[in-house]
Image (cartoon, rainbow, N blue to C red):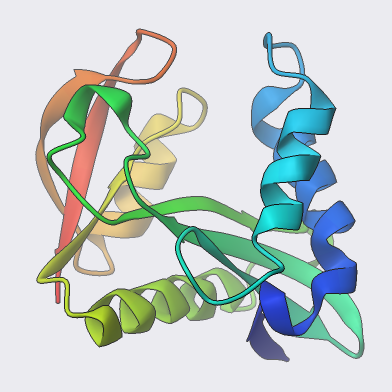
Length: 157
């Protein structure tokens, strides 16, 4: 398994957009074309937002993104780990950990002192446990982009 920046495997942007749409946006007021356009824009170069894709035997199996201003209520905090997703058939193999490390390494390489994330509304406790076991700390709460309270976590680089 290897992890590559999306701009090095641009042909995979549609798969990542579909995963993101199905996981976080289906049933909300965001159209698929907007998600597709956002992932296509990440194929151009290594600027932020930058997505990474986990590939196993030429098959995409997971993704994650490093972006700015992900939580609208806390634009004073940057950058953000966003959209961590591992295809269900590949979970429990450490792929998520490697994807998270890709974002941490990129944020550190840019010179940021920390990286943030906020918990999605589904599986909050499981996500909190997943990240805190890996060194992330809860630093507070804020409204998410849909207006629901969420927890913010930070990883010191």
